[in-house]
Length: 184
Length: 124
Figure 1 (cartoon, rainbow over the protein chains, first blue to last red):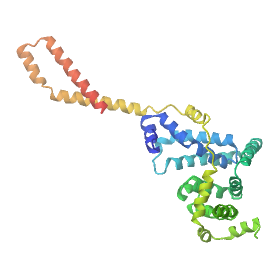
Figure 2 (cartoon, rainbow over the protein chains, first blue to last red; figure 1 turned 60 degrees about the horizontal axis):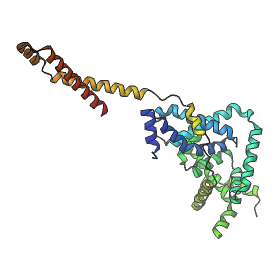
Figure 3 (cartoon, each protein chain N blue to C red; figure 1 turned 180 degrees about the horizontal axis):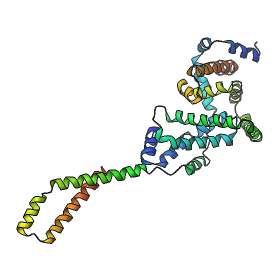
């Protein structure tokens, strides 16, 4: 039976039901790991470690979760904090070999994808880090601007500006694809 | 035709209000394409690793349940004691010289009633 997040959280906090938490981990692991891979510049190992830490930290902090925000927003906020904190501490120690290997693996996969996907990734690569994250959270994950601002710890206006500018850039860069789709 | 850099500089020079007037269809299209492009990452033991590292579940809820059961038993006992006609029984016992066996039986009955009340209250 698929229970909603609120019911699962109630079972975890009130009954100490760890199986309920396993359901939450299973529900969000793919999305969170994928998002963190982007935030970690393709370092899959680091992204998975950070995702694991985020889930553990979230579990420990669950009794204090007041439900003001959605669980997913709260979880993303924890994960983004962890990654940003890690980046600040370990900025010069990025394992370039691992990153290159992961990117090479991705390139092989990408080459097998449709041209649209490849060009979309390429266009996303033209955005600034903040713009990419804002677009990812708002347009791919479906978070509201307010939620994205809370996750990224940025003012709401800044996030809106990032999204608008990113959207305008992407619209220009992907114009040819859209016209092709529209014209069939 | 504009070069790539020219396109970029045009966008960067635009105000946010100018950017806001964008095509809503584009948003829907972009959102759809971004989601379509995203692979589902298999668990591959990720969930198990997280669960293995979680601290033991809090015993707070267990303790809370125990406290409630004790409270229910005490409450039930109090009700039984309140309703039980001690003075009448004692008076009657003295008067009729009730045998020790009857008193023991009465005690057992009272205990049974208390326990039943406690269990029922705890289940609720």
